[in-house]
Image (cartoon, rainbow, N blue to C red; front, side, top):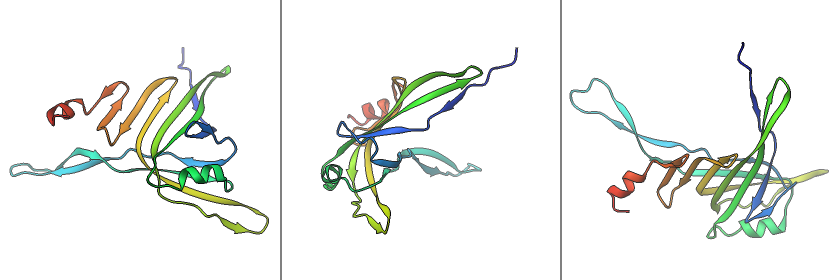
Amino acid sequence: MPQQIEIKRLTNANVYIDGNSLLGKVDECKLPEVNVSMSEHKALGMQGKLEFPSGIDKMEATFKWNSLYPDVLTKIANPFKAAEMQVRGALATYGNAGRTDEVPVVVYLTGSFKKFPMGGFKQSDNVEAETAMSVTYCKMEIDGQVILEVDALANIYKIGEVDLLEAYKKAIGG
């Protein structure tokens, strides 16, 4: 019997700030990329050079707003106060019979906004504004299962429930 193809689709989401829904206010959000810093290793007698993980690069998220919202702007204007953002979507699975499943995808972000939008004005066009958030914490869950969790301030890097930095933290006494 031939293998059945399953297609996963995630085509829409809602954004929350400090637990409050921003439904209809965000045109687009770009979630952070978790980039591992690599350090080169070379030594006498080795014919080649190698790279090994040495940390995590800074993370950034961006949000494109479809207008100026005072309630949101007052929350993101202070770069010294962290905001908690949440992006929620529904991951649909399709097969021969159509949509066979739909599960939540939730991304949690904590960080400070470093770019404050004043907007741009053009006749007959709605104002668009974009903000950039310096992210210190992010976690992705799919159907309640932790996929990835990174906390730069607490030295946490988890895949699933496994903290990849657990031995490192013990080794440095923290």
